[in-house]
Each structure stands twice: as C-alpha cells, then as structure tokens.
Length: 375
Ligand SMILES: Cc1cc2nc3c(=O)[nH]c(=O)nc-3n(C[C@H](O)[C@H](O)[C@H](O)COP(=O)(O)OP(=O)(O)OC[C@H]3O[C@@H](n4cnc5c(N)ncnc54)[C@H](O)[C@@H]3O)c2cc1C
Image (cartoon, protein in one colour):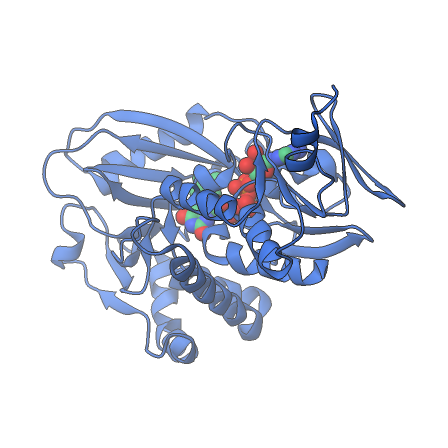
C-alpha cells in the first residue's frame, strides 16, 4: 500500500521505540520512555483490538503479599530478597495511584485478608512467624502491617473459616478502568497505539529492529521494548518465561451482606473479593499446573468445580448463588524464583516480562527499569 504524505508522516514514520504488547507494563514503558524523549516517535503494537492480556483479565487486587506467601518467600530465598519485593510492590502501588489517581482506577482501600481454614497447619506456622514478619515489614510501611482476626469476629461473619490475618494497607482496583485510563494518558502524551497488530517475527538488523506483523506489514524500529509477559514464548522461546493461565468466575449479585475486602486462601492459591454485590473468585491453578501452562483462553471443569465448591463450602455456605461469568488470563512465570525479567536481549531490544502474577503492583516500576536500560 502506498501511504499519503500525511499518513506516512503521522502514522507510519519509523518509530524510535516500538513497544510489543499493550498491557500495563507496555503502556507504562511507553509513557516513561516518551517523557524521557518527548520528540521521539513511540508506537505500541498490541495483538488484540484493545489491551487483551492479564492486565484486563485479573482480579484487581492492589496487594503486596499475604503473611503465608511472604513467610514462604523468606524461607525460600531469604529475608533480603523477599523484603525487597514487598517494597517494590508497595512502591509500585503508590506510583500507580499517584500517576492515574484513585478515582479513575476505582481504587478501594478495602483492606486485605489471608484466611485460614479450621485447624489449618498453615495458620500455626504463620502465627509462629507473625511477630518477626511485622517487625521486618515495619520500616517498609512505617507501621506493623498485619493484625490477627479471631474466628468469631464480625469481619468473618457468614464465611466458614477458622481465622484470618488482616492488613488495612491493601485494596482493590477496577482493572478495566485502570487500563482505560492509562491508555488515555499514554495517547494524550503523544504515543501512538496500534491495536490488531500481532508481531509474529522480530529480526535485529544494522538498520533497526524489523518487526513482521501477522497482516504482512513490516515495521522498522530503532529499539524494541518486549512487554508480552505470559505470551513471550511465541516470540522468544529461548527465554525462561512460561505461560500460567489463571481462571476466574463471577457470581450474580447475592442476597444479604458479603465479606468486605480482598481475600487470599490456601497460600494464595485462591483469591476473592466482592464486586457489585457478587463474588469474584479466582485461582485453583495448583490443581492442574501442567494443564494450565497454556496460552489458550478458556476454563476447565476441574478448576471451575473447585472454585464453585469453595463458594459453597467456605465463602457463601448455605446461600444460593448463580455464576454470571467465567474467564481466564495468562500470567508469565519463571521456572525458579519470582524475579521479573528486565534485560537487554540485543543492541536494540530490552525485555520487561515475567511479572509472576504481581503486575498490578510491580508493573509500573518494572517498566521504569526497562526504560532505563533502553537509555
Ligand atoms: C486471573 C489473574 C488474576 C490476577 N490477579 C492479580 C492481582 O490481583 N494483582 C496483581 O498485582 N496481579 C494480578 N495478576 C497479574 C497481572 O494481571 C499481570 O502481572 C499484569 O497484568 C501483567 O501485565 P503485562 O502488561 O506484563 O502483561 P499483559 O497484560 O498480559 O499484556 C501483554 C499484552 O501483549 C499482547 N501481546 C501478546 N503477544 C503479542 C504479540 N506477538 N504482538 C503484539 N502484542 C502481543 C497481549 O495481547 C497483551 O495485551 C493476575 C493475573 C491473572 C491472569
């Protein structure tokens, strides 16, 4: 196709930076880069018509980690690494809120709970490490973040659980509104966003990074920021980034009061919150890790049934509910550890992937680090 003078200049000029993947990380990457280089042409290439990855398919928890998760991280990788990540999550959430504003992202400071079933051995071990954890985290938050909630507390009314630990510092967001508002901001600052642009080939040449799109278009960019997270295997099978599908369901509004907050259960393998009078519940990936190492969108009976059982037995015991919607999203994990992969892969390409299911919190800062590498 021959472009007019105007489309050639305004839409098809060779970008200084092409961002592959238009989710939270790609959009923040484009924003940070454009602010450093206001006169550079920045183009975001997104496979979906709109952002279509985990950023718009998640549960919308603005969280920094439950005690069970953090104690397990400390046991696995030591205090320094685990605490550094909590700090990144906390700072990232602050950046997100400051950049976009609490209203536009639907931030609700509803607090977060880790729930424990009756007589759960995990509760005993969390209680053993509880004081130490609060002490370690004190300097990050300026206060001890966690408190114990006993079984009989009204905060747990209606649920069938043994005990809980609460922090008032966590909250929830409206993930769709968040990405919509970020997209508006990025475009408002002069970044060009191209939906329906699936990159199928990337080749580094002396003249630039050649990006082949599924529709046959070839774009030559000065540099590339690869922000495809769970989808990275398609373009770079050599990297240690593996897809991990997460499934979610949403009930129709349920009669009567609902638990208020964001909730984690069974070491974070299940998580739920209330949404518009219903329960949004996700997780269960541990029941079929092999099957869920997939890029395929969809749900599976084994996991959906486990989620429904949890609703019936723990979250909404003795209450009627119907399921209104089910969906899935793909996260990116490494084989070992939870560190994001922010690396220069060549003279013209940097990657910001492997968000390990924490991208809402760490995404803005991962993107910032990648932009620093781009120079
Ligand atoms: C079910 C679920 C629940 C979650 N809950 C939470 C939570 O409560 N709190 C939290 O912090 N995190 C949560 N996460 C994780 C969080 O959503 C992710 O870490 C974060 O959204 C990652 O952002 P991203 O921009 O790196 O990836 P994505 O949002 O996946 O963006 C990657 C984009 O790249 C595009 N793309 C892929 N391949 C190509 C290609 N070849 N060419 C062009 N574009 C391409 C995709 O369409 C996609 O839009 C959850 C994730 C899931 C799936």
